[in-house]
Length: 125
Image 1 (tube, rainbow, N blue to C red):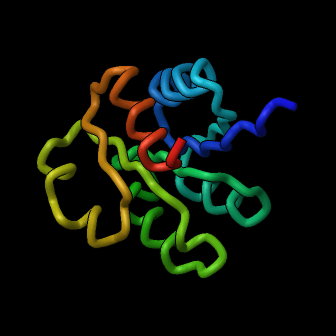
Image 2: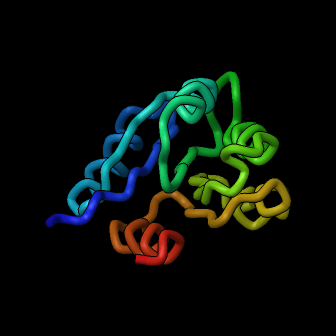
Image 3: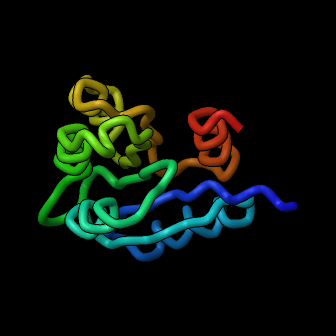
């Protein structure tokens, strides 16, 4: 019997960035769900179960930081591991994301190995 793939929700307004993350993780055996903004992520999390959320930090209408705060405020999903992706090194180093409850930050551009390693480390696989 084949083990059930871990489900990863990817929230990023950039279709190319979202697609790259999804392609890399799917090739590593993960199931991926893609959404283009934070509100779609929140809506999906109300009805779907995922093992990890990966969010871009800079998105229109709702930043990754705002998304993280909303997730942490909702008891049913407050413990969900979250990786924030950003091109802004200062943001990745800042305490705002960590204080909001981000599990890890990845600076764009990152390698396939860095992405897969972070996901495996967080999911304990």
